Length: 329
Image: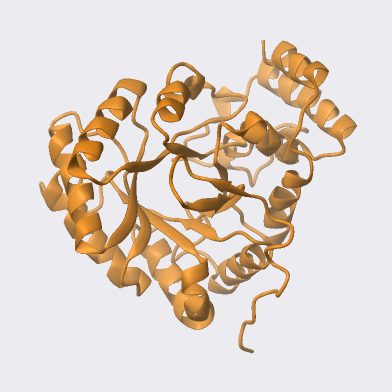
């Protein structure tokens, strides 16, 4: 059956301007870091993407190494573009990145011009695209001059292979310098993609000020702290959770009694707000408008629906914010 997008998909979603640019992003964006690799179900991933788009999620975020195996998330996404979304390409914002290990040898990692340009060429082939909307330097490279990395991003835009450029995991000082270099080259920095949640607030210590002062947007990943800020851990560590598996960023030893206690208290506050804990976590990162979009993952359609529903209550009273601060202490 041919996919036809929901005619009312733009009626409920909130769209925010990215810094000083002309681009708008949905308050909730979908990331394909997990659950879209070759080891995962194509039909499940397809259903997630369809439902997300039907709910007004127009931004889909990838990277060259997403899978597993690396590259397979882009390949799966490319098949979905061909099968379902080709008529809607101009209604979508598609991003990808390069900066982490991707292939053997000296040219398949970090931030050289050689790696970034070659990686994007490979990504475009995997996704069956002529260009991406946003291309990111996925992490700063301590051994490559920032001028080279930013010069590669500028080159990619001028080639027509990306409309905008972004950076991810850069600290405030590196971000400020990236802004300066790109401005001089004539390709402004559009957006920064940092990690941010109630449990990980490093961007409040300078980065958000740098972004707002320079008209750069932000899209935050792990707003639910890799599942900690959901109902998944309210009863302890389930056997199918990310924390119970090896080779993940969330380790079982990180989930202490203190952390579980905070999760319980935050969940009670979320109930008072008429939200799930995950929804409150998303609303919290989007509060005050300093974050352009919250990037969520999903392993099933209901998770997308739950995340998008967060936009129905994005405001917090002073009392609620005080309670959250007290809990997090």
